[in-house]
Image (cartoon, rainbow, N blue to C red; front, side, top):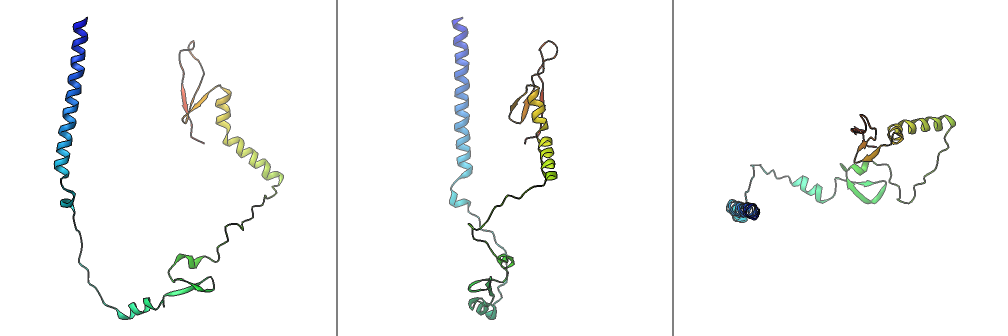
Amino acid sequence: MWHEARRSERKVHDMMDAARKRAQRRAIFLAKRRGDPQQSIQVVGSRCRVHRDDALYHATQDQQGLIPWNGKQDILIDRFDGRALLDFIREPGTRHFRNQEKSEEEEEVEEFVNFERYRDLIKHRRRGCRYRRGWFTTCEFRNGGKSNRTVPIRQV
């Protein structure tokens, strides 16, 4: 019995030594492959022609492409800026949330929709199912209590 334990211990130590040596060899290989980071810098480019346009330069510098935003002359934005499409921006604290009164029909529809939304959850809970990570584990016992089955449902 002692010989058997010693043999299995030696086997475990051999496996650990082999894993350590493999890790060392892998580290050396990756270090050689990686090399000096300064040597792996690559510069990629393509040709392009530079057209000198003094009129466009002066127009940009003189802010000729800017338009007043929201009627305010002191706030200028580019004419292609998406904010120009906004009519106005509300101040953050000025929103008033009001509860709209619902008609009796709308309340009935909402109650029906909520019932449909939670129907599967209620059905599985009545059967005694437990919810676990997107799955319901049912507690139905068939064949003398030998089988449990899982029923996948969509997450709510």
